[in-house]
Amino acid sequence: MSSQEGHPQVRTVESTQSEMTEIILPNDTNMLGNLLGGRLMHFIDLTGAMAAYRHARTHVVTAAMDHIDFIQPVRLGDLVTLKSSVNRAFTSSMEVGVKVWAENTRTGAVSHVASAYMVFVAVDEHGRLEKVPQLKPETADEIRRYADALRRREHREREHARRKKAQSETAGLKDAGAIEP
Ligand SMILES: CC(C)(COP(=O)(O)OP(=O)(O)OC[C@H]1O[C@@H](n2cnc3c(N)ncnc32)[C@H](O)[C@@H]1OP(=O)(O)O)[C@@H](O)C(=O)NCCC(=O)NCCS
Image (tube, rainbow, N blue to C red; front, side, top):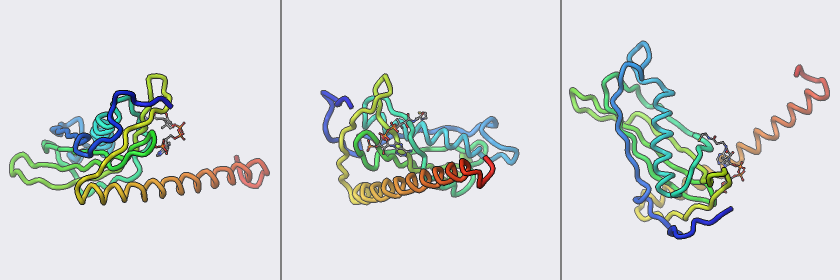
């Protein structure tokens, strides 16, 4: 793993904060005039990547989008604003939180419509893992998110191990002819 020479060893959450606003057009919606979930996930991925790029200052790839809540629909014509920041940096990976609001352009009413946690991994131009700077949480909210990010990483790792075990058990049963391949 190569080091980020010339880059700071520690960054603030503020330095990673990113924001994007989109207007919801007919092509973004379903038959009911609501924003498509996949389109919203695309916006979330892009805004999350912006924060990860600002932290890593190298290439990043999406490793996981592990928790997303669609709280209420976004309507055709609404303005959607997404805000992201890095919650915690590990070795080559970073957890990023993304929060989404919709604004009704006629009434000006703004509502929180979705939140997501994602993991991005820093890589060089050959796809090799890169070490990222550490993150220094400063405010009470940042310190809480920093602590929660470690718990979520541990949960992700347990889930990964559980799925791997289940897959190898299924493969073993298939090999033994106990279940259909
Ligand atoms: C993400 C990727 C680079 C990880 O590579 P890998 O060889 O599996 O790496 P490792 O298992 O050594 O893990 C490297 C880091 O990624 C993290 N990671 C790997 N898979 C992960 C997953 N599914 N969820 C969360 N974190 C993950 C590890 O926790 C580790 O973090 P750390 O260095 O901070 O401790 C690789 O799986 C990949 O290229 N995936 C495809 C990415 C992609 O195409 N995304 C969509 C388009 S951008």
